[in-house]
Length: 139
Image (cartoon, rainbow, N blue to C red):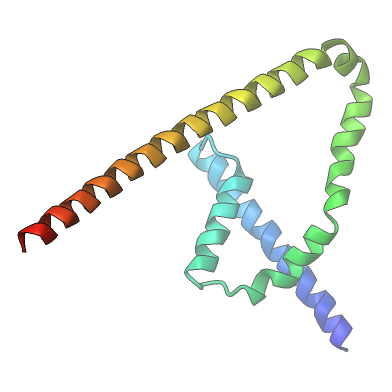
């Protein structure tokens, strides 16, 4: 009985995930949004979880099941790679080059932004410390 209840709970939660995705897909189509429905669904689910409108236990079983079966979701891309192997063999080096260049650009940009933020925080802390020292001397 408990196993049946657990399976029903998992099925219900997965159905809710699919329903949320369907609604977000409908929203994307109707509003012509440039964001994928899956991204909107994830953001919406995070907001619902953070505001506790949806409790964590309401999605735990279904999400754990989907994470446990995640390997199955990689089978279609592998089949696609096998289907288009000749194209990848001929032009794959360009794809790999684009991926490497894109990764380097993103990592470099992120490092630059983080460095600027740390420098800004350091200056702000130094100013605050000098203000505290100067106000302590005058008292």
